[in-house]
Length: 422
Ligand code: EPZ
Image (cartoon, rainbow, N blue to C red):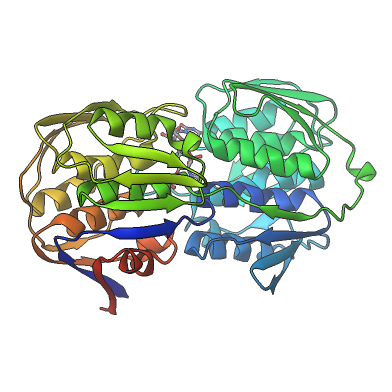
């Protein structure tokens, strides 16, 4: 296993290009199951979650072939509709194959995703929606076994604007008979990117990005292969937020490119309230030296609220800001695992249920720390960049799930960072 060694404090300069969004790629790769043809994905990010998802598609008979910067995937000749426990247990997003398989093949056998470090993360909202569409769902020996004589479009009110459930049900609706309306739908940019992808392959979808999405179902028999088959996925707003916060914590000036700042409106608004100088430029933002930032009070919420995926990174920034800050995590039940590690580096953070109280510290110091989940790991990197002395970060396979070439990108920005074998 590898580890990262970071010597601090650091100053960053230059520019960083953000990779394609992990959380847009995964549902769009799942959506390739809907269309029996070659699909050319441009610039997929080199992330373990993406490689893994492609393995799941291949385990069903999909083909994949690299062609320069693109990857061509075809699900024209699938030989099974079974997503195995051995594969699914490692990544919750695998459950996203359920909707497309059920819609196109009228059956699916998908392992129940285990919980994960940040919470139990059930799929009850996904399954309730599938049943409303006319699927028979049985849970047996840890598997979701679903089948239907044919899905029928209907109104699906979601109990919670679940991102995954919205995506799964959008895909299920594609080959359902008649119109489906998803109410209280998630509004994340990744939902809009999935809708754009589905539209490119002939689907009629309205309202994506709002809390009411309408999908006009079609008959799979009428599907026509299209030559307009290449797709470029949006930039990763969570990766972008991580680099923006890195610049603010090190009082640096950098450009963060290849993402849409609109996708981070709530994050940029909070950062500016804390005193950050962030300017929108073509293709992204420029962060200007902003000195010591002020504390803030933040609640995580579904889009367009403050994203839970930036909570850990913001907490690291609050840990070296001026004065008191509060963060309340409203989406996941256990997303504070970065806190003990940040405290070991000298940050003053107290937990109270789903809230954290942070007292900004003048200085923090390097220490050996351990990654526990993807975004907690990012918070440790950020703290290490400003800490005095050396920080050794272990179990960085968590980082590789969602940050492409992180050490190289930070090195190019001037950070003293090395990736070494443990
Ligand atoms: C997506 O997860 C993202 N993952 C997560 O990013 C992100 O944190 C999350 O949305 C919220 O924005 C991908 O897109 C691959 P949810 P997802 O369904 O779809 C509960 C990262 O770091 N819930 O919106 O799993 C659930 O337990 C990852 O990149 C149910 O109770 O999130 C959670 O508490 C982490 N029943 C809340 O809703 C359900 O059927 C939000 O879950 C579904 C969800």
